[in-house]
Length: 366
Image (cartoon, rainbow, N blue to C red; front, side, top):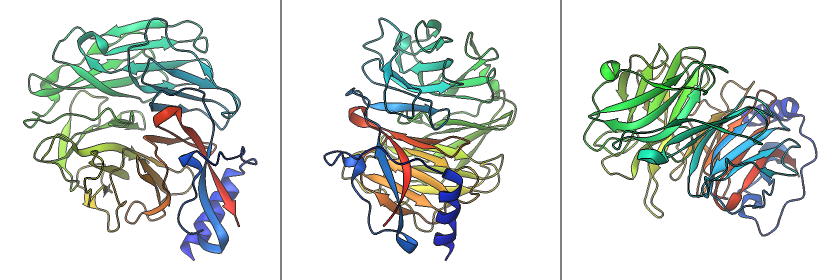
C-alpha cells in the first residue's frame, strides 16, 4: 500500500511528458525487475548526448535545462529537456576531467576539473558556455580537488584530498568568480590513507545556507565531516559503510535538510562485494546507521526526490535503486550503468554516466 500511494504521489507531482523513444540497445533503457504496485514502474529514458565521455558531473536546473560534465574535457548543456545537447567546453581543456558542475540557470555555470597540481581548476561561464573564465588553478602539488557544492548563487565550497594531514577547503563568495583556501585549523585530522572520491560530484554537499558535509574513504573507517559555518570548522563521524581499502568508503551524500541525510558507497572495483552500501542519518550526520536493506552493490550517486519526504534514488555502474522509507530499505528498479543522479524542484530527475549516457526518470504504467 505504501509503495502504491508513494508512486501515485510521484506520478502526480512529476506530471511527466511523454518520454522520448527508448533505444533498445542502450542499457539505460533496459527494464528493471518486475513492475511496482498496480503496474507502475520507474524507468530511465535516454537523452542521447552524442559524446562518448564519461559524465560524472551533473547539474539539472529544471525539466528543460541541464548541464553535464566529464572526461575528455566535456561540458554539455541542454535547454530542451535533453532532446538536443550542445558541447560548450572551455577551449583547450580536452585533457581535463570535469568531475563536477554547478549550474544556476541556462546561462550560468561553474565546472571543476580534478587532478594533481594544476589539473585541478575551476571555470565559470555567464553566457551558456560561449565564453569561460578560469577562476582558480591549484598551485599546491599535494592537493587534488574532488567535488564542489554551493549554498546559493554566491557562496560555495570545493574540497581537496588531505594536504599536510587535513582536507583542504576552497571557498567562494561571488559565485565562483574567485576562490580562497580556508584555514585548516578547524578541520579534524585525516586518517592515514583517507581521501575523497571524485566519482559523482557528490562527495561534498550542502543544505540550507550554512551546512556542508564531505564524505571520505580509503582509510580504516569511512567517515562524514560536517560544517555548520560554511566550511570554517568541522566535526567528523564514523559511518557503517565498509572502508579499510583505497577502493572503499562513502562515495556520495544527500541531505534533504539540516538533519535528514543519506550516504552511499561500497567498493568500486567490479565484482567486489559491497554488503553495506548505504547508511542513514537523522541528526545532521552526527551519527549514522546502516540501511536495513541496502542496495545490492556499490553505488556512487544519490539524491532525494522533491516533495516526497522519504523517497530517494541511488545509482551506480550496476543499477539504480529507490527508497520510499527514508533510506532504510532500497529496491532495484533498473540495471543500467550510471555514475551520478540529481533532481530539480519541479521533480525532474536526471542521471548520467559512461559513454555519454544521460537519462531522465519517468513512470511507466503497464
